[in-house]
Length: 319
Image (cartoon, rainbow, N blue to C red; front, side, top):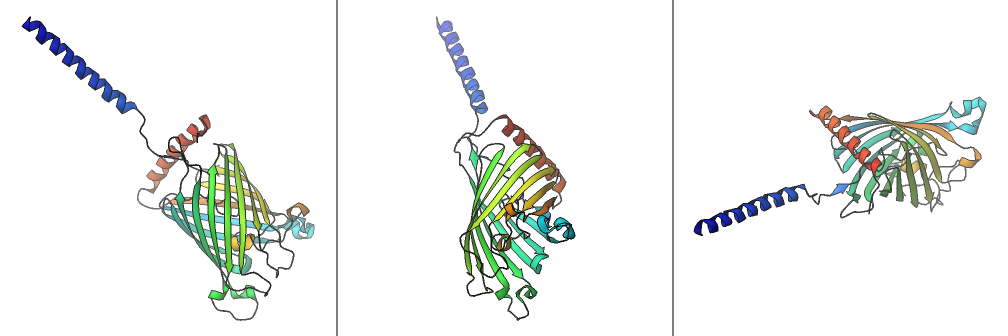
């Protein structure tokens, strides 16, 4: 009898150990409550003319070339706008994943500009979902004195500041939308009737057609208008077809504005898109990973993005 009791106790102990091992295995296979952020709301740091909510990854240096020709309806004498052009060259650097800075120079008005952009909210999916991402954008633009005429002015007088709140959501794997409240301040104006402070609101959207191709649209509505422009001011409108090839993002653009920085294309546009005042243009960017392990990081990043893109294509989002 004593041996039988010992045998039964050992069997029960064995069952308990096996059950505990099985519990540990099952618990290890349960999904952890990790935060899963939505990636690539937009493929680049621009929607078309304006900034998107996106930043580059830490240590990435990006070289941007933006080009706008003259108006298509200028006729054959101007080769339908190809004889005129405005070009902007820029270098942008990601200090950390959520913070980037940039410097640029435009041939139009010979303007220098610098900006800082910080993403402080990130869209999440799954458990604890959050429906949108948000970034703060601030820039300063300096027009060289020649654009103000012959009257001498101080450095600060020629400065214009732009502040924006970029709010975007990747509504589905194929469609993203952004809204951009904007405040622009000029230290000086041409006419007394010109407002020094201008409020505007922008909207932008991107629709993915294939894994490498998308179409985009962008519109900015200004609540205050400059009175000193040579033509009546209009709101900025742009459409683009976007192609992604490795480290390049290339956009072919149709827009009613020839300028490419916020203080200009939001407040100084005079073209009527639907009356033929359309500028053909393009944006092209090339990203470089700075640092000893740049190539390795770039390969890892591309592999992760491909896996996430494949997963997004197979299933939508649940919020």
